[in-house]
Length: 603
Image 1 (spheres, helix red, strand yellow):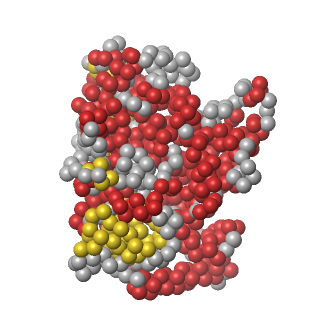
Image 2 (cartoon, helix red, strand yellow):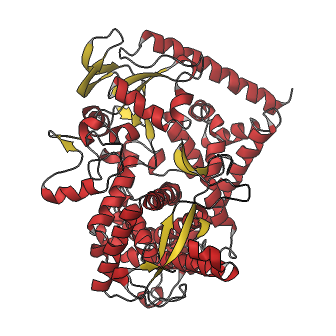
Image 3 (cartoon, one colour):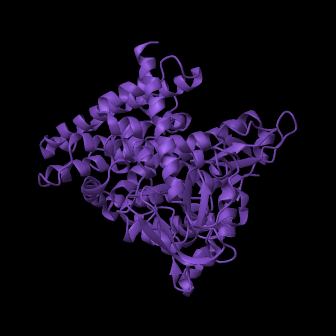
């Protein structure tokens, strides 16, 4: 037996022993709350709920209430929470008792470094204090021009594709052209993140201009998903070893005795992380050097082809340099923020825009109303698109920030989409000490008695169901699971969505839980909301979207299905698709632009 294999078996033995200890501890501190029966001897309820379990997650909360006992791996019991008072207690009032799971923290530390999602306590507070002003409204106003340039480039590419298809097949063009929107939305989102956050000119929308760094960023999320099998090992290794030896041991675990595909997936993730780390260090050093330049040179200094001083990293570096020694972030922490902001913003925003376009395609009447609203605003605010470096049409109009963010129907469509389909449906927490979780709405104990609080032991795992909270009929009404943007338009009439009988969720965004609450809420929500709205505002006046209706060569019409595993991902159901490969095929048709207020499709 080789030394690496010996180390590997030793770590496995330690993991099994820890799991046995944990199970014995859980039996002594069983949750006294009702929940579904165990469905598998070692998987519990995990597979049915969290592997493509969108409806199952909703059904469990609807049947048992806002606090439910579910069976996790190897006999553990977890508390599945969606009650509004409980979530306020967990995320706001007693946040220090309900911390991130150690597996989540350690894995993030290995992949991203010392960023916001891998730190706790005072270090997290210091980082948050530094980053909060970076995402201010005034900075978003400055960044909007960067986002708009990318959105217009995306529109130009799609319009060019539609025009090219019309030249090859005019009859088909009259009825619309089908394109897979997902890769284009992903590339657009990557450009927005790289330009807006890092000031790095990724040019992801230029498919002939690939580079190793942007390619690694696009592959990061799928690679993390494929290596989830390693997550239980990471906390045990990281608690007992330094970061250097922890990485060494994890490397040894994949040398020769695990399945070939598992080893390949892990090594691919390591390759991606190394590329990201190297590129992030180069960008950071370039930007720090630029800060030393005289103002006259700084205005013309285009770092790595990026956005000069408007990007968030430049703003953060200036603030960090002028901070006191106690509040200043180290280079390691700055690198961590770079990696975290890219990962947190890329997949979530891509999925949100994709879902919004899908829903608008599914509801053409609302799409038409939204197009009319956008075109009306553009007619009222004729701010021409003066940057034609990417766009081929010179009729583009860019809305001011305040106009973009306050279009009533656009605001309603975005809010309703983010409420019903949060990019991250569930998150986890663990208790640092024994506690009691109060409930807004009573539930049943394991013996059937009505209770208004659930007692939890130290190291109890909890699942925060953002999805179930956003679908809670007791707060959002009986139509909570229906996509109805007009519920947000009623707020001007004194009806506030998500505030029923003075009961509401503590979410930082319109009382919903999509961006969480408290000091671990999503710090980039303003950037994400701005990007989503700008992409929709740019595309809809030019393109009409519809669900696929043309059969393929085998006579099958593509049916889009959204899988839930970590993120929501659109796929095409069999037999037209494989049900696994992420795809969003939509039928598209150009809109006649000679009359913005009476836009029509080409006939």
